[in-house]
Amino acid sequence: MRRALGIDIGGTAVKAGRLGPDGAIEARVEKPSPAREGPEVMVALLAEVVRELGAAASPRSFGPADPAGIAAGPCPVGIGCAGLVDPWRGVVLTSPNLPGWTQEVPLADLVARATGTRPELFNDANAFVLAETRLGAGRGAATVVGITLGTGVGGGLVLDGKLWIGRHGAAGEIGHMPVIIDGPPCACGGRGCLEALIGTRAILDRYRSLSGAFGVAETSREWTGGEPLTVRGLARRAGEGEGAAVATFGETGRILGLALAGLTQLLDPDLFVLGGGISRSAALFLPAVRAALGEAVMLPTAMQPRVEAATLGPDAGWIGAARAAAEGPAG
Image (cartoon, rainbow, N blue to C red; front, side, top):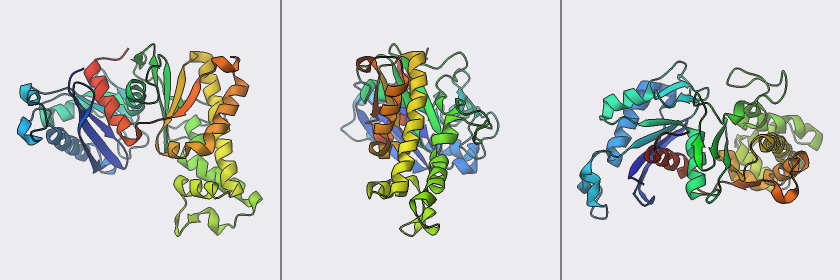
């Protein structure tokens, strides 16, 4: 593998780093995301990150521990971005969870003009699943489905060892699979999508609807520890045994497990890897996910795919973008 840079664009942070030829992390950086300020401000930040990490820097920029070979020329740069992307043109087609990105953004060309290095563009969940397959929970597996759980629900596919993005680069958009006809509205403009059922907003709404039956005071449904209620706060409540919170994670896990059962019937994967912010609470809903999956698929228990939490944490997105850029075009 060649040395490569990877960048993960998020709504709250931009995470980036440089991988060496052996796949080891040589440098990393994290900066507040200017996603709400629009693509132009984001491009300026991305250019700063590329220069800082040394796409064409001298070795002295990084100290004596870095291989002198870094000065040989620009290394490939991969960018992972939430939303629907066209990796061949380097265009963000639409990104429902990045405010202000309401039309096609030629991100690769804009970054190329700002840095002199044209990056490869990938959906962030595709980058995530490639990283986890190569270096994380899916290491050694041939067919892996990655799912990122947070404000949005993303997905990516590695089939027979290769990242699979489909004809238009849109394969793996698991969060926008319709699950319930005329279900709750989704950020993509559809209704009843998986994201609308198990994303952050859906989990908190589920808690509010369940909490009354468990005797949770109305004011407590919106606040925890003096702060607005979050999934992390809800996880603390579940860990303390609050019935409504426990039931919320259980029902969320059941819905996800049924969705994974459908994907199992279609793809027969080795493994599902769950990442994203909500996956930090995986211990609260993984048993329900596995139970629902096991009950719904036709495969015998011994042949059913594993469901595991991701292991690379917040580095997975940029590591996957770097690996994808170094490995070349996806299938």
